[in-house]
Length: 309
Length: 135
Image 1 (cartoon, chains in turn red, orange):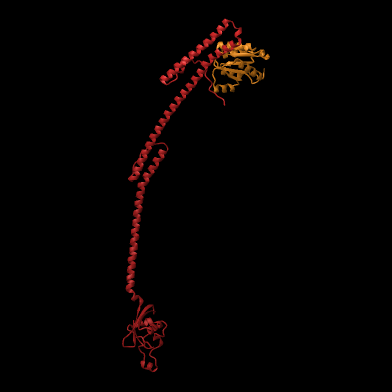
Image 2: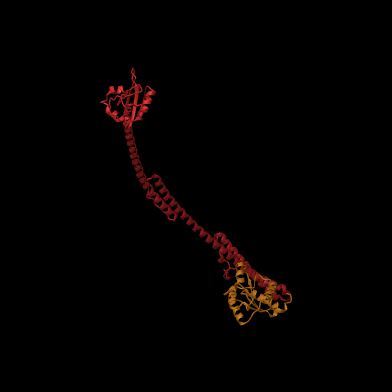
């Protein structure tokens, strides 16, 4: 629609596209209007044709009053944009009113295209990321299978080693680090088993040595006991005879004294024989590292093994 | 030896010693001291004498042929009640702490290591007999 308005206070639209303007302004062109009669009545058209008096166009009229040209938004049967400018050499203003949608049609079209492109890009990104994450998911599952099975086997190997079963094997893994770890574990288990066997062997050797030492100690203790007995008994005979002679020497005849001296000498010979056996046994001990207790006189009773606190 | 105490003659001693010379010396010394002494060369012989008569005290070697002195002590411990138990003095050439403990456990009154001082032995006999309930 294009309006041509007079610059004076009365502005009358001239329609170049009358039907749309009539729709916008809700007017009906007064085709049968008698201008002569109206002029005589000082009135060309009713107030509804005056943009200054209409509520919906008053802002346009005021804008036209304020400036020679400009644009303003109106609401005339929908959103409209009005653009006005003075027509040079006249007192008329040209007003062009168009629907806003038509003014921004290209921009809207571009906007829609951009939106479409944006949506397409978004959809593309979504599809890309969905595919990417799906790929990652399946890769992760595959990697998980590659890692989980060897890890479980490693755990079982560890558990068996912990229970003392050191001879283990490892099926291997496509993951180099896990394969190395499994093999190292198997090797470590074998080394642990070897170390344990060595400890057991050492313990056995030590136990045997301890038992041998215990037997030697027992033999030595028994030897000392036997020696004590074998020396103390003839000593007791000598001491007994000496005590009696000491007490009763005056009462004894020479023969009796001789008899008792003979007892003492016999006992002394027993001690000498015992010492000789002792020296002989000691020599044998030095020769072969063993005490030959059987070489010593030993006919004593078994000593009691029980003790009391 | 000093004059024996008046009560010695009422004390009968059983002397069990396999070493004949030592047993004879022991018997001689104890008889000179006033005790009534009988000798045995083994635990079995000693047991036979114990069955035949009553003794105030037993002197016994540990190492004996057959039953040992400890075996004899155990048998007597089983046969005799606490009130009628004959005091038992051990003479031994073994000086062993475990043996001392075992003898003490089975009721031995004293433990003397050979060689023995006869005066000390006599005093020990008198002491042990004086402490015995049935003497």
